[in-house]
Length: 59
Image (cartoon, rainbow, N blue to C red):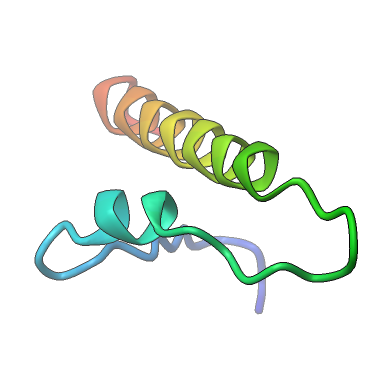
């Protein structure tokens, strides 16, 4: 609340990798399921890399 803490949500058994690779439900006609899946995979990769950098750099 005061902006002086950092939180990270992590899967307890590292199932995040499996979760992002599941085919998402089709949100509407013409929804690109594979593009949505690729976006989720990329976002997980970016989040993990940012977390590791923050731990490595002591931030």
